[in-house]
Every structure is written in structure tokens, then in C-alpha cells.
Image (cartoon, rainbow, N blue to C red; front, side, top):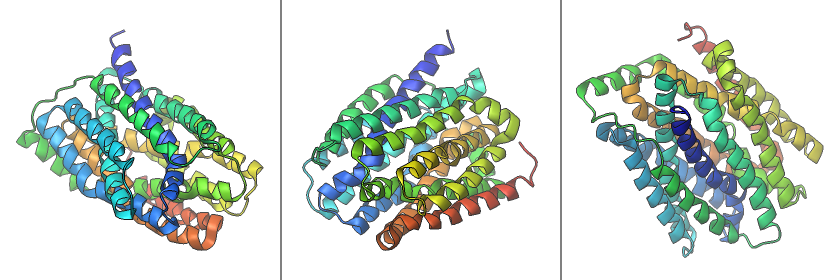
Amino acid sequence: MTEFRPALRLASFYAAAFLIVGIQTPFWPVWLAAKGLGVREIATVFAAALWAKVAVTPAIGALADRLGRRRAVMIVLAVASCTAYGALSAASGFWAVLWLNMAAGVTQSALMPLGDSVTLAAVRQEGLDYGKVRVWGSLSFIVAAVGSGLLLAGAPGSRVLVLVLGASFLLVAACTAIPARATGPATRARWAALGRFAADPEFWLFVAAASALQSSHQLYYGFGTLYWRSLGFSDPTIGCLWGEGVVAEIALFWAGKRLAARLGPRGLMALSGLGGILRWGLAGILPGLPAAVALQLLHGLTFGAGHLGAMYYLARTVPASAAASAQALYAAVSAGLGSGLVMLAAGALYARFGGQAYLFMTVLSAAGLAGVAQLRRIAEP
């Protein structure tokens, strides 16, 4: 029972966080288009928010480690994100949308590495199964993607923000329920621990490989819905396709602890690279609904195995005293710098090549696989 309670609270956090993501990932481009933004402007808005993470997320992680009060920092971030989404309802013009979207996105995204650091601390200290806690975020994503697809069918794109704002209020409540794991203020020993792994070439090789694997999803995240709409798929069908991908992710997470024990973090990441080469290589040249249904199953490998492998790698190699900083640094580079550059390129590629731009994403999956192969030459931690 003592393990169940923190697991339930952490599961509630992931469920609330991914409720927003499940609405936003498929349909935020629709809201931006309803605001009058074109394809390249949409890509710029996404890329700006991703790049902002590079500077802001590590600073927030360092602050959380310095204060030793991660829950308090998370509550402030959730309130700030909710406020920025509220301001977007009255925003007009490209620049207003860009800056407010950046503020909302950065404060929201900074929550995830902090939540992961709290969860991974419970994995180390209490034996929690990360995959079975994180899976509730994936289940929430399905409910949000499918449900918002049904609610938005035939509705104006402006209604997307109403759903996102409602989910943001739930995230504020969930952050107040996060287990209060005070770690104490940062000390010189903590900063020394952070410095040791930050100076380790193996860590940066891991970051580069994991970033390539996750960045390969950017065309899908930014323009997958618009591409499927161009093929004539209905919004409810699109919502179901997004949900289907996450069902595969859930299956992977549910078996994650056993897979991590058997394959190790690097083995999971290698599965992500192989799955990405297959998925993105076929996505743009097999445009029909049956092919889309089949390829969405590979999301369990491309995202699920890649993310789980990265989390277990960090749990095994990063000292607990520097966990928030390490999570934030990894998130900033993988989801910020790398994904921001790829998102900007994805806008130009999609504008020119349409669905065939997916072929360019195979290069990133192959690069990630090559990085993992190099990591595997080093002894498993």
C-alpha cells in the first residue's frame, strides 16, 4: 500500500500531462491554421517553442535541484502554462501567437523531466515499475486523441484551445498531488556529481543517439494530421490513428521492466532505430488507410522503446542527487535543440514533398541506430 500511493499520484500526473498532449499533438496545427498561419509559420511556431527548451529547461532543472523542492517548482510551472494558454485565446497575429505559444509550451514541457526525475527516484528507492506508472499517460493520450477527434468533427478549429485550457487546469491539480520528495538544497557534492557525468563523452553520445531517435517523429507530430486530412481521412479516423499508435506504446511500456532487464537500455533504443527506418521509410509511399493502420503499430517501437530505453539509461547512470538537472539537460537537447531544428526542416520538406518527406526521417532513425551501436561497444551499465 505504501508503494501504491506514490505510484497513483505519479500516474495522475502523467495522465493529466498527456491529456493536454493528446489533444494538442493531433489538433494544435488545426488551431494554428484556424488562426491564419501557413505551413511554414506553423513549423516556425513549433520550432521556436522547442528551441526555447534548450535554454530554459536545464535552468529549471538546476533550480529544482538547487532548491530541493521539485513539487513546488512543478506547481508554479503548471500555473504559468495554464495562464499562457488562457492568454492565447485573445491573441491575434503571428508574433503574439508565437510568443504566447512559446511561454505555454516551455513551462508545460519543463514539467515532464521534473516529473520523470521524481518517478525515477521512486524506481531506484522503492522499486516502482516506470513503465506501469508512465503507461497512464499513454492511456490518457488515447482518450484525449480519440475524444477530441469526435468533439472536433465539423467544429471550428478555435475549439481546440478550449479543450487544451480545460486539461491545463487538471494538470495544475495533479501537480499539487505529486509526492513531496524534498532532496535538500544543492551542495558542492551535487554539482560535482552533475559535472562528472556532463563531462562524460558516453553521456553525450547517448544524448545524440536518443535525440536522433526522438527527432525522427517531428514531421509526424507537426504535420501528420494535416497529411492525413489531405488524404481524405476524417477527424474521428485521425484521432483513432493517433490512439492506435499509443496502444502499441502502452503494450511496450507494460512489458518495459522485463524488456529492460532482458535487452538493456541500449537494446531498447536499437529497437527504436530499426522500427523508425521501417516506419518512416514506408509512411510516405504507402498512403492508404490500411497502410496507416499497420504502420501506426510501429509507434510502440519508434517512440515507446526509445523513450523507455533512455529513461532506464538515465536511471542506471545518473546520480540521484543530480537527477532533475540530468533529466532537464537531456530533455533540452533531445526535445529542444535537435527536435527544433528538425521541426523547422520538416515544415519546408512537407511544403515541398508532402507525405514523401517522411523518407527524410529515416536518416535520423539510422543515425540514432548508429549511435546506439557505438554505445553498445561500451560495457552495459
